[in-house]
Length: 428
Image 1 (cartoon, rainbow, N blue to C red):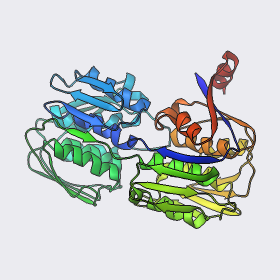
Image 2 (image 1 turned 180 degrees about the vertical axis):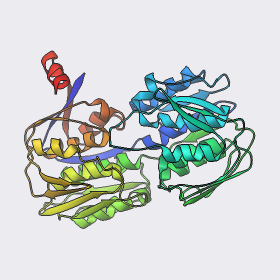
Image 3 (image 1 turned 45 degrees about the vertical axis):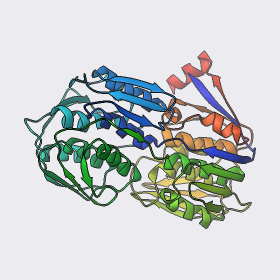
């Protein structure tokens, strides 16, 4: 085990290139197994979730080869192998194996997913969609058993806008008999990315990116080559880092439209944000204005950027409020920020951040992926050295974080945890 060390107070300057989208990658890799021949996915981020999903496909008989951001998946020899535990427990997005296996084999056995603990994130809408298509779903000993004699298209209305349910139902429906209509579908760019891959494989999908998606089932899907879209959450995180400490930072390989909600809020704070065709230039301001933020489904303010922006708001000159309407347990990072001197009060789904606060380096713990990003932002701003433990959460979503930040002028490195430190963490 290791810890991430950050010496705060160093200004950021230069160019950072954004990796492929994590939230696309974790759905595209299971989607690739539905083809009858080799699928090549390019621009994959160098994160642990990608490797875990490639291993899951191997467990089920696929031949996979991952090299320098490109994954080849040959699913010709795949079987509906039960995947009740093990790797499945390491990431929440393993639930996409349900829709992909059900769509390919009409059956699946998948353990209930792991990943970040963000409070209740039920998969009832996924199950509702599978059952509407004709599958019988049972929960036995912590694993979901899905079985269908035949999948038949249906009209499915999602009670809650859900990215995961939208994608999972798409996966199950592309080879179902007849037409499927998903109403109240999520509109995230990652859904369009998955639909593009499936369409390149021969699926017939219309309306991805709108709230109504129509799918005409096909009998076969073939291999193809696909390049993942840039990661809007990674891009947004670096925008926040730059807003906190940036003299002049260019964030390259982005789709600015995907980041409009964050860009507008940073401008409201007084940060200079200039969008190019595929880049965004950030210059911070000596005085940052307090703002109020409410997370919403896309194209609203992304819940995945709520935690890092909370850290930034400790630098604003006044009181700001952040309300998270998506997850009700996404403020665990505030306890860690308070260890660094932040003045934050949490009530229910809202956090009140009082600035301007000078943060101090401290030992803190990344409780989940985006909380880890918040602590990195805080460490960049703080006086002294910040030690972040449970770095494996950060590694799930940010490729080459130290290298990218070091190139911008940050002082950041890793150290091995001592035996005493490991024992202390285990006992905490």
